[in-house]
Length: 169
Length: 307
Image (cartoon, rainbow over all chains, first blue to last red; front, side, top):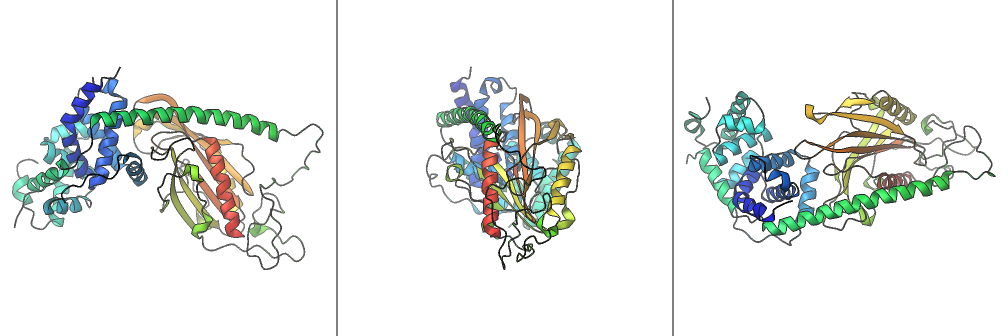
């Protein structure tokens, strides 16, 4: 039996972080919103089991990541299928920094984007990132290092070197 | 001005926070409604397939008093077209020599001209979905693989003159507009060198026979796919239909206990081969009745194009 109240509580406590993650991984506001909604819809369908999951938020991130790396048609289909509540409410335009970062992230491989998002948005150490993604620690370090190098090349005034000295051995 | 990456991510987070993803109860109701429609659609589709098979069997079974078809007679075309009159560039000649595409068919009756292989593929060669199947997403032409991997078989690659491929998303008629689609196709049209298209279908049949089981591409956890040919007739000059069957998995990668079936049909019309590779949507299985209907529409569009 699924408990709607516990799902709603979970939803309210995690959607903000999930939207940040989706935006950083997908690189598009609208697609991120669609993917996050789809991930929560799937979570609700399996809430009977998922509510007992030791890390339901990590499960959600996994779903968002899989959807984000799926084929273009799924993303477009979701956009058409899930936007049922009329036009989205107007929001302030994104900040210049955000736009620059998102544009640069689109030129970074998906695996690197995912590792960077977990590190910078969730403050996760490389061991936890490796555990969540299911790859060796060395691979995560490599992804973070290469992702930053790529972003540094794309964002010339980025102060990457000082920042990364301690968090990636 | 120098900035730090963490600062940029903070900006991104602030922007994301400004976006409302809706209320949880609305999302729950929507997800439940979608699941109900999907379940109802699946049941209805199975029912339609059963009814279709029963009716089809009655239609196909010849009455006892009928005259048997002569041995070696060509498969009847759904829309018997006359031989091309003088000047017609169409390669869609009814096969006077069964099993051979027109490039190798000697001109039949006096006054006919050898069919000419087309060299380009216009948009109109691609069929339009029936209105009840449309989801409001325009097909997109992409350079995609036209067939699934079949144990690494290389099928007809060197004989290709021209090819166009598109991705096409559809819904089943009973699914309301605005709901999640029910399936998608990789749909290709390929012009082959004169006389090679039938060889391509032979190669495809053989490739399916030679590849009864293979590992699914990608992740090791995805298991195996089992391939088999399905008897097929009534599509174009000839056709090859096969299924790929694998164990279904949910989004966690856990087995669902049900098989996922993909249907792939290659249809030859003269020197042209069109392939409809049904790829489902979120683990849905191909529905034979829908694939058949779209196959017929695909053939009709190609025949209209070829004249």
